[in-house]
Length: 106
Image (cartoon, helix red, strand yellow):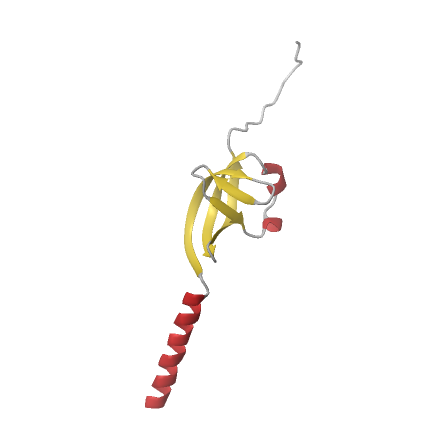
């Protein structure tokens, strides 16, 4: 029994060390970021921070909002000093849809 406890403790210590050395921190908190997304799928926030969009190919309509002012909701993970943003939803700021009824004369 004592031997099993030693193996369990050693395994737990090894798991803690491996997770600490991997450099990955998962916040899990939902955050909102306001800024722009550039052609390299990086979010440049209003405060100057830069985030990398996680799996940009899975974000519907991402190419249409590139270089536009957006409000992004999601979670942030940090890996090897990089901030990675997982987008759950977004909205374009300052863009309103206008419906014209009738004719426009100039």
